[in-house]
Image (cartoon, rainbow, N blue to C red; front, top):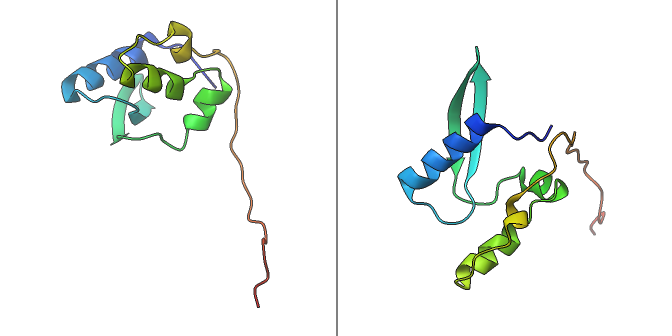
Length: 98
């Protein structure tokens, strides 16, 4: 479920400032007894990036703008809250070989 959560945004901002990372930073969080904990940081587009795209965020467009020295359209970094998204996959035979 996509959310707008000020606590998560604050964690993201603090992490970005602390490590001075530019670009995508995939962060895994877990909530336990009302407290959020950072589990993992990946300095790349993470596997959940497709959810951001489906929810309307256009992070690749923002990155291109930054690289060109431009300020990205603020809408590139917004998403639609309240969407329920799911990822599922299956193996498919492409070729049975020789």
